[in-house]
Amino acid sequence: MKIQLRLLFFHCYVLVPISAAKSDIAIDYNQQSWISDTNMSLIIGLSYPFSACCNIYLDGLDEIEPIFKQFRRIYPHEYLLEKTSFECFGNLVLAATEEQVVMELSRISTAISKSEILVILDKRIESNSSVLNATLYKNSDVNLVSRYGIWKLSENYLLPRSFTKVDRYEELAYSKKGLVDMMGREVHAASFFRPPLSYLKTSINKTINGIPTKIYVTNNEQEMDGIELKLFLIMAEKLNFTYTIREPDGPNRYGIPINDTTWEGGMIGQLHKKQIDIAFASIWQTIHHHKFVNLTEPWYQIFMHFLVPRPKPYTSFWALTRPLSTSVWIALLIIIFLQSLSIYLQAWIDPKIPKRFRDFILTLTETIGRLLGTCVPESCTEVRVQMHIWHAAGVIIVTAYSSSLAARLASSEYEPRIDTIDQFVHSELRWGRIKIKPFREDYFNIEEAYTSDIPDRFIPLETEEEQRKYFATGKYAAVGRVVDSIFFPDDNITNEDLENLRVMKDAIGKFYSSFAVQPWLLNPVNKVMLWLKESGITFFHLRDVIRRRTGLHLREVLVEHDGSDGDARVLTLTPLGAGFSMLIVGLFLSTFVFYLELKSVGDFESYKSRQKLFIGRGE
Ligand SMILES: *[C@@H]1O[C@H](CO)[C@@H](O)[C@H](O)[C@H]1NC(C)=O
Ligand SMILES: *[C@@H]1O[C@H](CO)[C@@H](O)[C@H](O)[C@H]1NC(C)=O
Ligand SMILES: *[C@@H]1O[C@H](CO)[C@@H](O)[C@H](O)[C@H]1NC(C)=O
Ligand SMILES: *[C@@H]1O[C@H](CO)[C@@H](O)[C@H](O)[C@H]1NC(C)=O
Image (cartoon, rainbow, N blue to C red):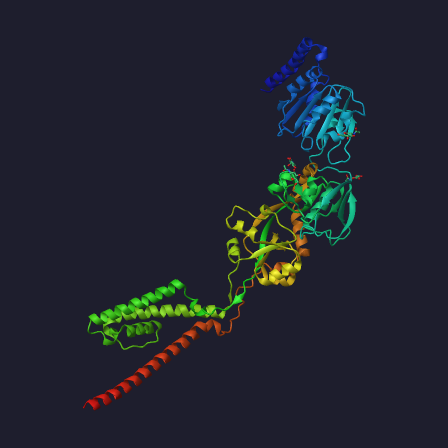
């Protein structure tokens, strides 16, 4: 077997040069490509490390035809000729003159940093040639091969970009897809005060590239803190860049999309206008952000929650009725009525049953008395079984009621908690942000029925005092993020206000947090990000920052205060109110009846005496 394979290999080896020699004879020497096949496949391999298809742009066909044929033969993937597919990031420009190259380049989307361009120029290039102007190629990776020289454009992360002449085709290799060395290049970043992700606060005015901005002071250890800021510092170290961090543009920290092409203000706007290279501080992976900027791998998932008023303790007048539900109360009334009716009817039919049961009201009173165990009646053999069962049921119901009542009255009563969006909407809560109008789709999942009501309950606020006033009304909720099970409000809230608030259980939205970057920074930053996640360093900083910077009050909002505190409560008048009221009403009624009786007796007496008079006169 081995021998056979070797033989086969030997055959191929011998045969190939022979067939090549044959075609050499057939083709005119001028029609031969000036790049050898080995070199061509090397160039292709090094120039298109990632793209698996190629757009080909040809100009000056006669001179370049042999190279084109050779490329077609060697290129291992599909290619498109004179047609542009935006899914193809590989590009070949094959031309005879410099003007032709410049013209063809205008058809390529050079701004996308994924674009890989190979220019083959069938001409000698001078060092001041127009094709060596790096601005033509924007963010793409470029290799340039000419008849008398090979050139490579410096990689995207080093500014200013320029072509260097290399001696061998091997030197055309790109290094950029991994950890790159930015050689101390200054990267412009943007961030803002957003605990626990970034604590930057103090800034100074400065003009960068003609744009007046505010730069954060980076020598303050207290402010150079925060989870995402720490990750950014590691990136700076690993990728070897220096940095300035500036404030976002305008009042809205992230900015707002105006239409499909314009993003107004904020960090995303600055990135879109290419004023900065990287932005961080809780930038969510949303469709809107994706449309305008490049987002890195997320490092964490963040949940949006409301901070809602705590349930207040209260005492109900109707506390005595609480052990039994309404349906049980109704069932009891019905069964008492039916039992009385049954005895009453039996008394009319069966003469042996005591006569007193022929009065319905008396029967009803006795049935209730027997149920409550307060009536010790004379025995009556005729309905003994029925009465015994009635007594037994009475014992059970009364015992259940009393024990439940004792447990309830001894512990405090609270308003129901607000834990779902449904309850939030029903309890008429409003919410707001200071000086910021959140972008609707970025906060909530609009598809859920109730969530769509929440944006309508928004009130824009101007100052913290205004927010405090709203908190005092008890009908106002604040919005914030839960990071590693600690709640961080979006707006600053005083400790006194925090005491009356708790976190609503249901999240209103969840988002992945990532960095927004310029396209050329995407790969290196992603690489560091994945490495930080993999090694657990993101988690270390997450825990570390939260441990160091989170006060007691932020932890308190997760603790419920409306449970039983273990102490029995002294009963006041209100929970027993219904009972006392019944006594008073009963007393009043009986007094009234007594008065009526007195009156009627008085009337009868006077009637009788008047009758006597009348009769006497008649005699
Ligand atoms: C490079 O091209 C740009 C336009 O694309 C032009 O403004 C600039 O002057 C050119 N630079 C040189 C050195 O020719
Ligand atoms: C970082 O860049 C500087 C140039 O500013 C260079 O001297 C240094 O060697 C680089 N560091 C590393 C670790 O590559
Ligand atoms: C988007 O808005 C900007 C500024 O309002 C405007 O200049 C631009 O023409 C708009 N673009 C489209 C496609 O509507
Ligand atoms: C970067 O963002 C641009 C739009 O701003 C988009 O066209 C491009 O595909 C993005 N690149 C990556 C790698 O996501």
